[in-house]
Length: 149
Image 1 (cartoon, rainbow, N blue to C red):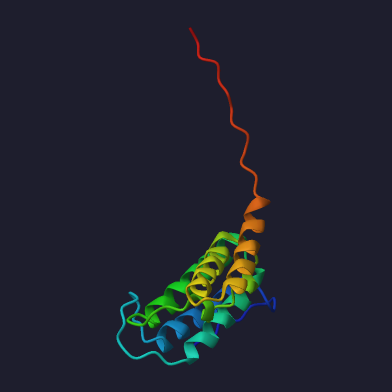
Image 2 (tube, rainbow, N blue to C red; image 1 turned 90 degrees about the vertical axis):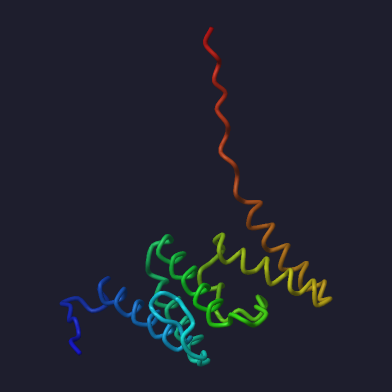
């Protein structure tokens, strides 16, 4: 195995390589092949690799962080296929990624699971957090164009 050496420690190529390695290991331990098909039983170690990948993604752009989060959730859902997905116990730490639409969607699904389990107070707290995050987003003003005669 050949390691890529960089003249600058912590350079972008090293971070992206380490991130990719963690995602590949997570997929492997989740029992998935390169196409995402289930080929073996999931080993619980995949959860640690998913969170390690998200931790490495902190220094990347928002678009790349969202891609890592989305991929991590897809690996988790594929690994847990055949079981009822419990969003409240999502192994991916969505707090690491901030309040983006993907992490807020996970939080909303966790709130719905809490509501179904008669945990109304926890559900309301999560939904309040989601709604306050979206309340700060303002729609762009619409342009009114006069029609030409």
